[in-house]
Length: 193
Image (tube, rainbow, N blue to C red; front, side, top):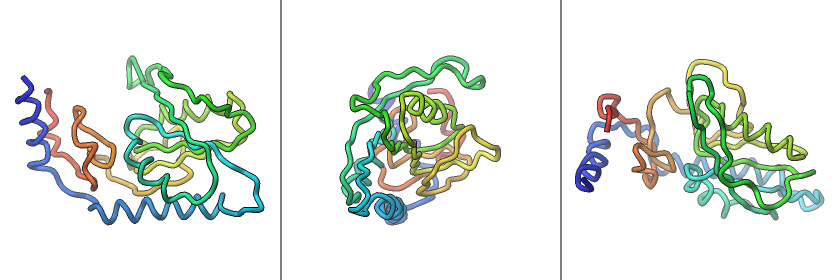
């Protein structure tokens, strides 16, 4: 059975199209870091934000952007999942909540992708309910789904087409988060496992 999954994972890239190479991805991360550094890098502003990575998809993006941030910050992560009917929004469950207090603070939420936006809208609302002064949503990819979303990202690295994309934290069946670029998979290769 293990060989089946390995063969299937390799086959996913066989017909995939590279949308953005490693250099384009790294340039986008650097642009995002520069924007955050411009806002929070002024030593006269005694504002040290709390940065929260959304696990597990944001792990690669978070690991790439954090070393480029030049201001004092506190880091933690959150883990949320959506259950139930995804067409109706489903129920968002927090598996891991932030340990540091968010009350009265600026919180920067790092995520790999803004797709339909239901989960990130819930995260922003919950953090504000917990007393955050401001919630900044920074997503590496904003998927152009052709309709409005319940939340808008404050900072976007790359806008991607409405296709199934893997790489730089995004996966298919648990595989290919580790790709340094972004690849659009062929829909015919995404049939049932």
